Image (cartoon, rainbow, N blue to C red; front, side, top):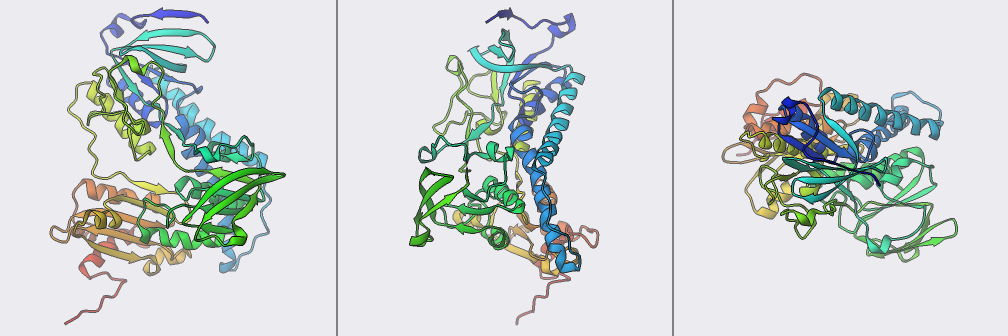
Length: 488
């Protein structure tokens, strides 16, 4: 292996006066940090194994899954159109072309990020980094060469990976994680999804739309354990029609190869004796993610890693080592791309000497199933656990003109409000396009808006966004489309 020692970075005389920044990891957090650092006139090196920035989100996560979910939605709407007097023949699925289209979306977006790197004069190194010390990285490049570079500051954005449960360690091509499921090698006749979280439900929805009989197993009493039960209920009802089975309070005791499939053994009160053993063509294990904090040489620094594997940081995203910052999945939950991006920007500004801190009042979460589920701020479930006094206002989409025209009255918009100050503390939405609507809730919480602020903000008609306004009107008992009788 060839080794080249470069200390400090080569560059122009003007570059020598700039802070030298390395960002390890090219996902949404890493490239956001790198790009802003370059915009703030730092000399930036971005290191990632892929040919272009993008990380797991663009290559094997958010983007390809949403491309496939769009296809699933199109198939479902073609079937639903029978209700409107329009019938289509069953879809003919060309799996090769579908994969090509999905990959073209990824290539377009990652290629665009590559161009943005060049435009900002960010040095992009395709490889993997290890620490020699707090300010020096040894980078093993994909061309088998090695470089050693020194920096003033280093930002770790190494992300996360699918968690593996020992009982599911089975050497079989039929056993998939989320990456394998997105490869879409075939359309199996049957699929077991282990885990009722957002990844399992999103990918399960894709395969169900393509014609697979999908069974979901969740060890807890409900799907999407972190979400409000009011929001999950409409989704659960719809998924019951799409999936072959949803088994709650159920665990998978074992997985074994069984001829042409994988035999799963279930345990739980929801499973009848005759169904305790079933064979599936494929199994998707989706039981969470774990941080990529096992960075070679990290022990040579002062960085602290917590008991759950997360790197510990302060509000400026600085670790216990003054020269090293960390952002994104590797520093803690929620493991969301948009959270990582904002952390990356805060870290870059902190390094530049700006007075900043990562202290959001609300981080939105979106599950891109059908219907979509989105929430931000305080949830009713969380308020009950914390014994906080709140008032809940709900607006049913059955009273929304726009929802009815879409034949999707199964949604709901929900506000969590402080009963004394009338300040909006949380917003939850379930329904078509909920992910596009939740940003108004995030803005309301960040701006400390009152329910009256939302109620008095004129929303266009007919739109789904009106449901946010009318849920605020429900809080005051004056919603135009929901009648509340007066008492006394």
